[in-house]
Image (tube, rainbow, N blue to C red; front, side):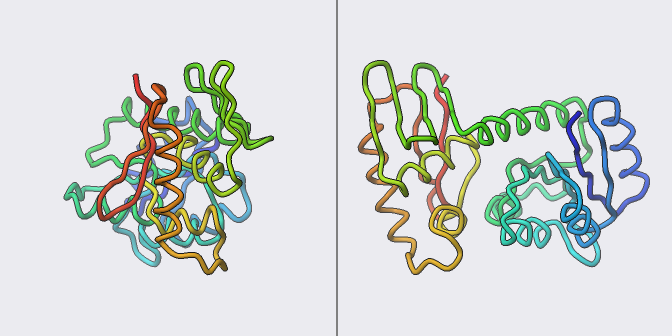
Length: 223
């Protein structure tokens, strides 16, 4: 059973979410971001479901701190805020999905399950999309008899995007995850690698690499 951490400062709503999810997941709870960080330092958490407006440490700061510490736990943000710039801020700090209140619990379960599937794929080191296999063990992309062996950074960038379809990664996120926090590369490096990947995979039917102007990049799996 997956461990889902629910972070919500409203005690009644926190209990309601826990009650609705506990039949399907092992539900942990925290009243703010500071408590959530302490739990995640000591427990294995598979998915984080967090409010944004909270005392002590809010949802944005929580996710930003998680990512700065190398925590790749999938995150769903729950909030009454539905303006585009609020969502943009959430994705910019590293959240994976976004739901507005009031919460539809059936939809929340769908979204948690989707993130669990994606994180499992990322952990296995091998992504299969239609006839294309992206293999982290040898940095290759195989489609039928065609085998592409990619340079290390290009492969890591591709694998990152395909591990979380539709998730927007900012250039800063990508630099941190692919090049590392202490690297001296800049956003031009990310753009150059993305251009190379697009050129190599522009004829692939299974996925597309997309630029979100002013925000970052994402991979879209084609139906």
